[in-house]
Image 1 (cartoon, rainbow, N blue to C red):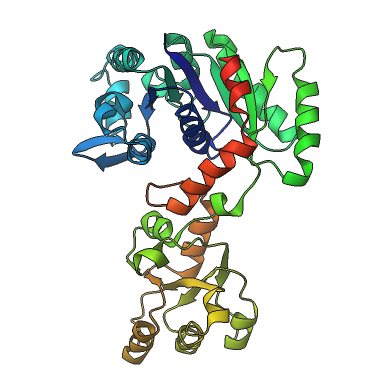
Image 2: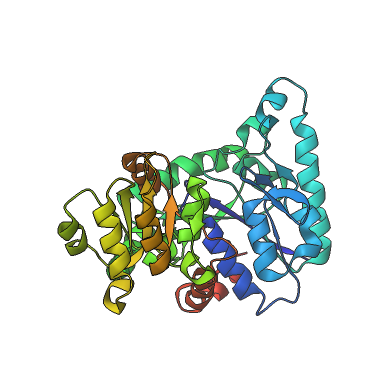
Length: 363
């Protein structure tokens, strides 16, 4: 019999994908046949000739699940999907049946199956595939990932629990994630007190990690849809700080922190040349992750030559510095299949920070 866990969350970017990656890694050490499915895929990518959800593509690449691709992402959202459902051109019942068939096929193949929801509990409602409804329909008990903290976490959990209760789905476990290491035990203590009468267990997830939370240069290139000039190793560099290079040249240099992406307008020749020159020095190579050169003004030929000679990684955007800076700061980086450092860290931390045996026993 296949053991199923539905991974839900109180909101986007709580850590569902990281949780799925870690549970799959740990489950493969205990179970012979482990599977994954993203029933409703709101983020489309092209992989192996198929339109599938980005998380399904990630799991397939990391864990060699290509043979199950047809079942791993049964419903993906195209540009007109929502409108077609609302206009009656697409029947939600047909989409639900497609998900059920995919899960049934995976249950035949697997001893342990991760079913990952999308966003918060209500995501997918427009096409009849919200997390709560799908967990009930698939008879899959729920692990709900929440943000760390106490008060705000409890509020968000109760809000999402209401929809699961309405659907008749069973939430067995709440996993607070991105916990502050120094406050981990205190946070878990109060969350256990808050839900002690509910019968729902509390088990801590990952502690907050800048490496997992922060983006790579490659990710920013994909996020902003702009070209990255960098070699593969540079593209995988994790950006820990983003600085607007609007101050004087010396002040920009003085403000550099570890692995900083400096956003500089294309007309600031002196800043660009100075940073490219400093990139040759080991002590500054650790501080400068790269440049994001913004603005419509073309780079001067001599500046371009200096950048190329320094082999400093850079992104080029015609948007303003304020626009690209705001876009980056509003985003939360997702893990991609090329983020080998992050994936390795997730798998390493899973053994010490995730109590898989306790989770497995609950399901």
